Image (cartoon, rainbow, N blue to C red; front, top):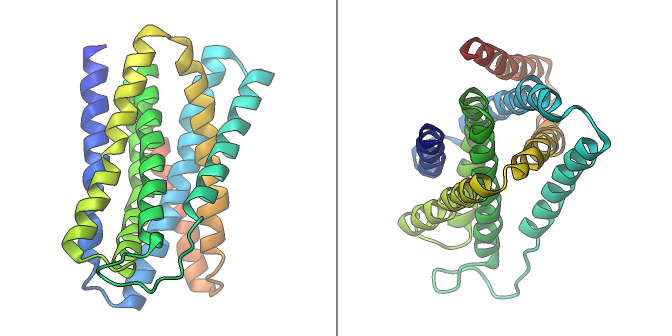
Length: 249
C-alpha cells in the first residue's frame, strides 16, 4: 500500500505541475500553436481511448465481470463529465473585463477546472489502488489530456483580465485539487475496498466522454486531408503508447 501511495502522490504532483506548461506557448504564433495543439489533442484522444479500452476495461472485467452495474457505472461517468462541462460553461457577466474586475469567465473556469482536477486525482488514485501498471497508464492518459487543456485554461485566464503571474498562480492552485482528490480516494479506498470497483468503470466513462465529446469534435473542425491524416496518426500513436504500457505488466 505504501508504494502505491508514493506513486499516486508523485503522479498527481506531476499532473499539477503541467499547469505551468502554458507559459512556454505564449511566444508561439497563433497558427503554429494551433498545429501543435491539434496534434496534442489527437495524441490525447488515442491515449484516453486506449487507456479506457486497453487497460481499464479489461481490469474491470477481470475484477468484477461485465455486469449491468458496470454498465450503469460507466454511463454515470459519462453523465458526470457532461454535468461538469455544463458547470464550466455557465459564464455570464455585464461588467467589461479589466484588471480590477476579472471576468467571471476566468473565475468559473478556475472553479470548473478545480473540480475537474479533483476528479482526475480521484481517477489516478483509484487506478493505482488497482495496480501500479494501470495507475501509470492512467496517469499518462490524464497528463496527455491535461497539456492542451492547461494551455487553453491559461489563455482563458489571461483573456479574463488576469496578469500572467496571477493566471499561472491560480491555474496551479486549481491543478492542486488533484492532490486533494487523490488523498480522498486513498483514505476512502483503505477503508472501503468496494469504492475501487466503482472508480474503474467511472473512469472508463469519463475517458470515453472526454475523447468522444470534447476532443474528436475539435479535430473535425480541420478538414484538410494532410492535417486529417496527421490527426489520425496522432490518435493511433496515442493508442500505441497505451498498448506499449502492457509490456510493463
